[in-house]
Image: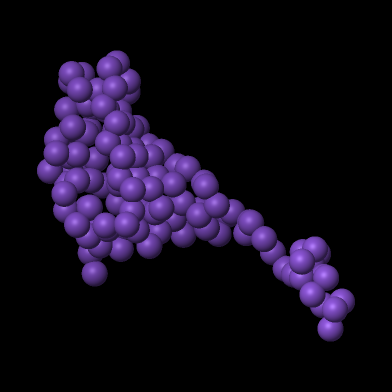
Length: 121
């Protein structure tokens, strides 16, 4: 399976930010134009946000488990380099997951409703 098809298994959201007129954003704009449709077809439930903004430095950001964000600058990159940057972000999901503690570990204290139900038995 292509890494593009498996993208939504590791990345919860992909955000592409670029300037509509800047030469530094040309590769990112071209990547967005040529790859958005394919990524969306392969990952229909994953949000892919294209954010053109005046005067910004282009970057790609990914949101992983537990709300962890990673981003990489794509200033001056061509389309192939931007594609490689997205692939690297997707590949970094395993490292992010290993370094992030789970939101809820162990049994913890019982919730009030559960404690009341247990006491009624």
